[in-house]
Amino acid sequence: MVVLKLALLNLKGAGLRTWLNVFILSLAFFAIVYLKGMYNGMEMQILRISEDTNYGSGQFWCETYDPYDPLTLPEAHGKIPEAFTPLREAGLLTPVMLYQGAIYPDNRMKNVIFRGVEPEQNVMSIPSSELGIETDEYIPVMLGHRMAKSINVKVGDVFTMQWRDGNGAYDARDARIEHIMTTENSTLDIGNIWLDLALLQKITRLENEATMIVVDKSYSGELPESRWTYMSLSALTKDFRDMMEMEKAGGAIMYGVVFALALLAVFDTQVLSIWRRRQEMGTLMALGMTRTTLIKLFTLEGGLHGFFAVVLASLWGAPIMYLSDTKGYTMPMDVDNFGMVLPQTLYPEYSVGLILGTIIVVLITVTFTSYIPVRKLAKLKPTDALRGKIS
Image (cartoon, rainbow, N blue to C red; front, side):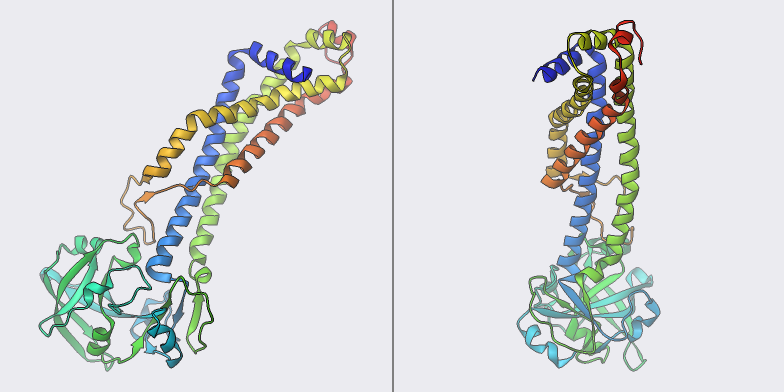
């Protein structure tokens, strides 16, 4: 207790130097927590959006489907296996068909992908029910708001669709936009035209065929066996998670640089304190303080910098973290053309483990950094200290 009181008095006596060190450390602490929270939040948001709108708990791919080879897309379809029928009727599976085609809005051609989906499905969180319209005059379709903006169309507009059916013959019909959906998953928006799966199968002469089957995210039971390839959610998101690991590794380097600069300030302060307080150390030892206690005193002074930095960062950083968590951080640029699922507004994810872990790392590192220059006091002689020398 005496050592703690002396350490607090010494920090108070140091005045501005103490608070400058505390403020620099609080900046480093807040930067680490805030940036890690942003990375965690972005990862959680993208995974949630992908799971809700496209991946579910996994997908079955037909044997010829390869998302990394667009040249195989014309042949990327196959008969839906009978083994999927029970789960499909229970609403736990839904087939999706991808088919190449073109549209001609305002006499301009644009290559697109037709996405056939069942209007009554609830596996993917998209408004597919808007496609449940029966008409012989035109094909009812649905677009994303990004796609609608890029081709300058609105609900009720009519344009021509062209495709090559399963027999290789070209065909074309007029399509009418029944709904423009708003989705955070830009990969399902840009370059995609949504229509009723049964209608797409009919006009392409590919009855009961699909490209993939999406499993509901709530289903965790036994999956049917088939020749189709099952891709788990972990496998579907592997590329993204690998990218995030690389981003986090790059962020860790930045954290290290910022934190190292803050620790350098603490280290220099300790070295300066030992040099300027030589006679004080000699007096304390002459009054009976052991070398071990003296080392504890100076190490505790340095460690308290970290403690006060955590308190200060909590005072001014907590409101910032609250605002970012509730209002989010809106990206200053348009993220629609990034080619990946990326929401325009990011919300950080601050966990108790993240905050407590960072606090522990800061306190331990600051204390150890404070101890390094203090080790030489183990050989300090009281007579040398009283004369202003360091043994």
